[in-house]
Image (cartoon, rainbow, N blue to C red):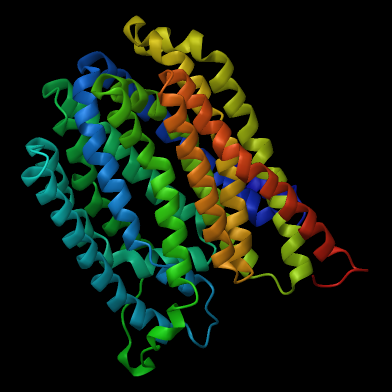
Amino acid sequence: MFARTISNRLPAGIAPIAKGLVAYGSAEAATRVVRILAILVIARRTSPELLGTAALALTLFELIRVLANAGIGQRIIAATDEELPALCNTAARLFWAVCLAVAGVQLAVASALFLIWNLSEAALMLAVLSGVYVCMPPALVQVFLLMRDGRLTTTARIGATQTMADHCLTLALVVVWPSAWAIVLPKLLTAPLWTILTRRARKWSSNPAAGYAPLREFAAYGPAILGSELIAALRINADKLVIGALLGSEALGLYYFAFNAGLGITLSFVAACNTVVFPLLCKQAGDADRARLFRQSFVLGLVLLAPVVAAQALLAPVYVPLVFGAEWIDAAPYIALLSLAALPLYAGSLIGAWLRARKRPFVETRLALAATATGLAGLAAGSTHSLAAACAAYAAGLALVLLPAAIAHLFASTIQSSPTKGVA
């Protein structure tokens, strides 16, 4: 109801984006309560060392899982009505092939952890989490069809339901079984819930009579988007590996807690912005309309995100000891510093949607590579001094690349939407 009221009061062009962002924002607000409660219980029931073990397994899982995002779904979103049936037939087969291949990669990494580094518990966790890839393919065509249909409130609700189930299950397990497994297992146990809800929301079945699209139809998006997603995952997850290697397990546990209590909350909104904006940009009739919608989307998302980031950064010393306990007061400055990284990451997310809609995904890949290099380099350099310096340098490294890029693309979009300039 709130999303509908907001969209009715905005210009027609930006109303669908506002509705989508409000839907995802509302879903995030609902899950945030459960997430904070889960983090609160984890903080009181576990130690930084135990949390570090779970962080290692989950970080590797998130890094490997990105391999499943090979640009197949983006091609479905950008498809015309005529080519859609054949593309979906081929995409369904590709999703199975890609997910099973990624499961094999994850099992290989788990074997390496066990045989080479003697990390038996983390290796077993990673092997168990490979079961997630069996749950994904039956609903992947459907979820991208939902996005193409503009049913973003539905995808937001499904994602929020799974996330809340994940956190609630984590909460229950940590209470009765305070171990790293209590944090890891819910990722696997809630995967079937997402599959069931998605298949119920969007009916689709393969139609062999429509034929199959050739694999080259996916080539334009596939390599570039896979590269961008891999780099983005490296940027978001490799930081834990750097901290663990340079500062040890206890520092990793503090960093992982700070990341989830700060930046981890706003990252869901950052990712949602790309999810909401990309399909709508693809539907624009011309470059001028697309450029105008990009600028409007950027401003709207920033207006929603900036107050949250400011509150997280400024109020961390107050709410951390009150909510999570006095033993986690040392993490407050890390939460404040990491939360600032949401702003450049938001800029990168919107630029990515803009470039994909303009069929320039390789430009996004190069930008993501530069931002990752500066962010992780700053993190590593800061780690030689302190954990606080590492957090600050990580956020600064991202901002050094992504904020100037945002200014440049916003300026370019202004030129494109000018009636006297035409298409750039």
